[in-house]
Image (cartoon, rainbow, N blue to C red; front, side, top):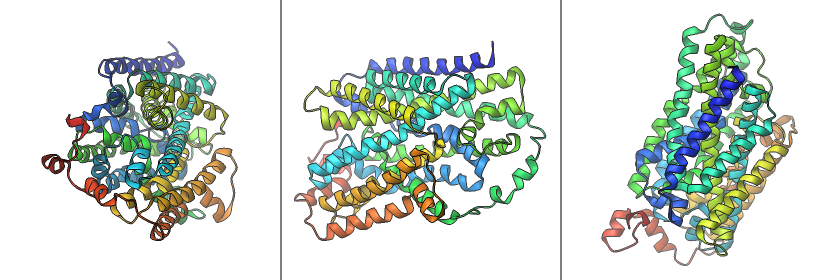
Length: 503
């Protein structure tokens, strides 16, 4: 069997496994609550594995290693920031957000701000962020299939879109949770097993490897032009953007209570930390064995190219197939969560009043997946990890200030939140549009367009605060803040609200 056939078989097996586990979850998905939040009955261990499986995207599996190999130690802020973002979630957001009893971020915006326009803006931003994050997943699938089999990139993108849509439409959150929990462990094994062989068998390296490993621009942090700004902007985007990702935040609604949500977040930190130890090692090996990594698509496929350069022969073909299986698991798990979040926002906000809950969910999922696939096929090439970072920048510039101020600052008003999300959203989205168009600019302005978070996040916070100070707070602010900050078991004991998962 040829190397291409082995890799294609591995990707096919992962797709079949995804559909099989999703079909098992379908037996448990019957109500609207099952489809949107798994009836709030997911345990911390399962939910942590599912969140980790969903969060470890194409950027984590392929992009980080490629960027470390091509650009050096500054790129280590990607895995550090993506993991630390969950610490911010744990400390400031997880439990209060769970107590809001909302299905989606737009639901939370309407509940906290008592404003229909705030809900509509949050819905639009939620869909935008999910689409921006979904594009690099489809793009990464296309690059992987092309690198392994020489098939056109659209084949891989379309295949992932079809499998994801089938899984999401069939069973919603209840089904996808089981799929993503399995896929986390599959991805971890797919990184560990080839890495063990590579570390045992590595030798020599490509010509000039020692010089490339010791080069100043690769080894020393913050070495290039505007590197201080770029580094801190990346930190802001990854640290604060996590809480604004709709497919991440919705997971805290699936736990039984706020305590379970906190336990889930702690477990996620452990699982992510374990996984993120591995891509930098692949990056160092890529620097040693792969001499040409300047192009975005070359760096994104560095992980897949390593076995052939280090080991060769049938063993390399099998290890490449294992990596391909893990990469497809990454594409499928993250794409599933993103399509699910799009379906939740569109289904609840736009279609729910005209159609039944489950029907609205399925139609919205189809619209989101097909539209994003079309945008992926039309967009220009962009490094997968950087494309994901742009989605984080938009999330950090919009939902992050709304959540932090909405939970911890009683003075936040609907007008302030709407104005702040508009300012942050427009500025960060403009920078993303430039990046996706393929144009690049020099100087500090080009650095800001490349990574806008250090500018757009403070502007969004400042706008929300200033406008809120001059406008009227929501009418039922006191009772809202009590709900957000009172433990659920206390409220239940006193005859207050009861979590839906406790019914």
